[in-house]
Image 1 (cartoon, helix red, strand yellow):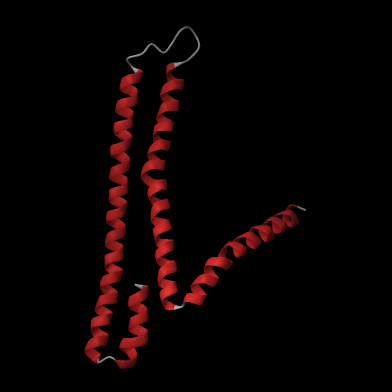
Image 2: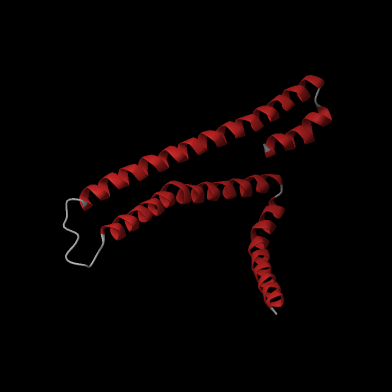
Length: 152
């Protein structure tokens, strides 16, 4: 989308014909619609993977759990173990089907954004890459000072 927008503004508007402008507008609209469709497909895939993995973990863990002797006196209550396992299974499933893939996707997007920015203007890309951590650190320091001022 960014590359198409740049090309539309820099080249098509300046030197293109009316047909070129129309074709570029069609490509931009298709890109937006494709992004919406891909987001919905990604959401469906993430939800499906979450449900499948959660069910598989429950089946495997509770299957093993019911074949063991868990209670010797008053040490554990059946609700404690099953409640804890249910929560743990949800957390493991969430991490493996949501958090880790999102981290990988975000890393790929950041690398792609840097490479695209570097393609546009190399000095600006490196400046942003080097200055962003500084801006984050200074933002944290300012936020901490504002928080203490608010508490005072």
